[in-house]
Image 1 (cartoon, protein in one colour):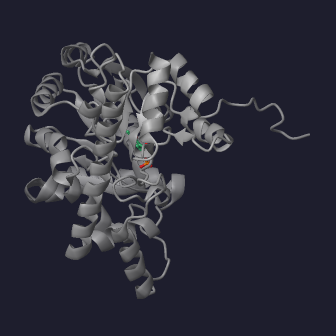
Image 2 (cartoon, protein in one colour):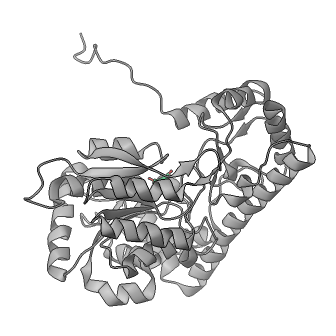
Length: 406
Ligand code: PLP
């Protein structure tokens, strides 16, 4: 008999389960608003033109497919942290970043967790590191940090009554948390709520994080999706850098380069000295080596090609802006349709929230009704992936939402 015969079946991933149910639905009007991947106005997956051109250039070169070093492509890593921090901060601290290429944003978060477990307050800590997540946060954060050996708790973030940030509760829960906690912050385009702090609110969060000796860990999976501009969307991270924080930064290039399956990401750690950076780099490699030896090469070549060529970089930035703009226009259309249908509810939060997601406020029961009566699929918490909305399906969607919220 199999030695695994007693293995209990585990639960389906909530988000991936939605796609399975959607695929099995035969209604031609069905809409998938579950998955956090960009779609064009025809509802189709997108490969950016800049990526296509980069792919062509890379192919032309006839490169080999040798292993990357354990820490990945040095060029890519340098370009990645430059995208986040910009010229000035990189110039000021260029030799004080420890960083490595990761298996996209998920891998960057996981490496951050592994580093925290092993080396946060090295030699002085007697308990697991405590990572505070916003409530709510990306569903994968908790398992990532728990599996890495951290304790996980949450801090107040979203207020369902206002469908916006509860800044007072947020600040006081960060204040009440144990000193020296690790605070996970979504750099922009918060998943799942679409609610980002204003610049003033970021400044207040930075102050309490500093006062309490907390360590900020930024997860930046959607740089570009809040405003359309990579630099504007990095303002939170840059503010924290200027305020004197040492920052852990997990970057994903899945969404803003559309490289989902290529697994392109970066973890960087801001340190006080080149010595410290060297030590952390040595340990990051020791962590990575037994997990996967070295990261994949195909995706980072495309990002390097784009960022090393002015013309391609301009094209990519324009295309990024285009993705953000299309989502913004879908937000307006959806809100306007609901108003026109005579909905008695206030739907302004659809346009006030940012990035790929809208935290609609729909209840679990209403989400179920959408699915059963209209073949509209979204997560049970009412999160709508705005990237799945198109100018063609928005009237149908608005009507469905109106019907289940009457
Ligand atoms: N962090 C957040 C908040 C996300 O929403 C995602 C993707 O959905 C990720 C990280 C990681 O994505 P990936 O591993 O594809 O880069």
